[in-house]
Amino acid sequence: MKKVFLYIAIFLFLIVGTIVVVLYGRGYNFSFGNGKVGILGTGLLAATSQPDGAGIYINNHLTSATNNTISLSPGIYDVKIAKSGYFPWEKKIKIEKEVVSTAYALLLPIAPKLENITNTGIRNPVIDPSRTKIAYTTSSSGDSRKNGIYILDMSLRPILTLQSSSTQIADDTLDRFSEARLSWSPDAKELVATISAGVNIVTTYLLKTSFNENPQDVTATLSSVEAVWLEQKEDQEKSALLGLKAKLVSIIKENFQILAWSEDGTKFIYEATQSANLPSIINPPLIGTNSTPEERTISKGAIYTYDVKEDKNFKILDSVPDHNSNDFINGFPLTWFTDSKHLVFVNDKKISIMDYDGQNRITVYAGPFIDDYVFAWPDGSKILILTDLGNPAISPNLYTISLK
Image: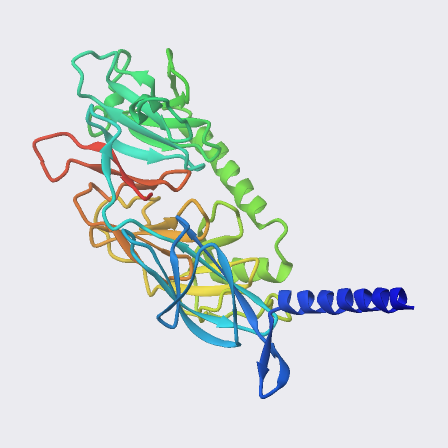
């Protein structure tokens, strides 16, 4: 008989324990006061950071460390994630009952390291559509075979130095490729090099990304090359819209000029082509999404980011800032950071990184750089700039700004 009671007790204990674990996992806490046991409905905050091991401050109280999950009562909290040597990350986050809210902080160093990766002096760097290669020209050598066009492959992992990541694709033995203006094909497999020898003397070559012993002169057939490239670009734009809800595609075509898609294809930067009210695409709204207040009323000319997965819309800029120089990404001072969660912004000769919803704008570099040539390294570890370090007597080179 005692064994029967023991088995029943163990069975009931397992049932109660399972219920307690399930309730706790759904965000409930248990309170013991005035001789009574109460169940409090709470939510969870999952906080992570890069680098990890940062302190999590809830309403200015050090509560835990990343990467961790904190149980909180429903409400709006001031969340700060901070680590020595890095700029702090701060945001208001809404906690809802039985919902997991997330906080991801990209912590940026207060004193980043600056390091050159070219030393020959370069001009006109142009990033390819995949954002992994940069083509540039150099003319510093007295040897025409060393002057010309080079490609820096940022996806390579050289053993000794990043300076070995560049390869030459054209030299000056046939023409002055070191003075060419460069542009990439939409599929990043070819480049066009345009060389001017006078007001009305222009030669255009089509180049492969490997060394071109006999560059193809396409001056007379340039319109055909441009037509092929235009078709490639239109196909890419159509492909990006595949899988989106028809209602969203209609809104995009009527109200948006998409400027850049994030690396993972879940978000995009756009300029509003007209003022409008954006209807909800996802009904009912998802829970546990970004709690930063969004703007569904868009203004013509303003710049926004849109999150396709969460149906969230955030204003980033009231208008495109005035730039008199060649801006760094197709004439626009804003682009995606490689993690698809942050933006790189160049304005007033400063380089900033911010959350994709416009929060936590941090200036990572305010030193000299040339013509707003700024590129994010594919793994997010650094920013690449063109600079002469403020010395006009030397030729500019590519430098990295370390973010880790």
